[in-house]
Image (cartoon, rainbow, N blue to C red; front, side):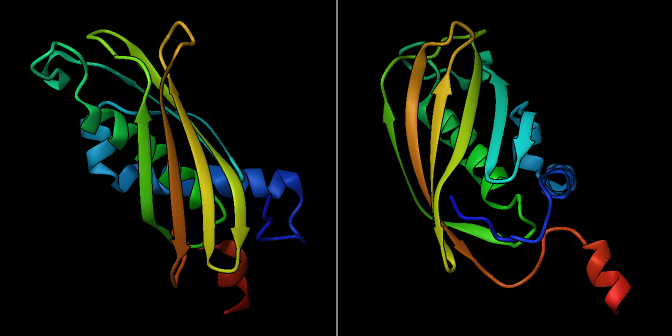
Length: 158
């Protein structure tokens, strides 16, 4: 797994990931509107949860795949931005393996698999409250210029 800040201690990296997640979530109106919550965060890792609401059901009375994709994509975003280097998705693919139903509490666990230069690969597994897998998502990331939150170390050097 790629480590963007080799000099950072694991405690510093964890603290940074938490600050980045809080800053991103505060501005992430889409994830908020869907009822997503951050369950866990760390360097290259994020877990988000979401309860399937009635207004998320499709014509088969199961959760619309677009909502599951969005949950996975949001977990992916929090994981790949956890180093405070602004990163966007360059692609994502999903495989649905089981339906999610109204009232299910879905968890999307995103894990960094590879980071090289500006690109990364992340795997996200979406499970329900019974631990059953609902979907597998693979995201590809691309780092652009900038930081997600102001870095105190950068501010001190200015």
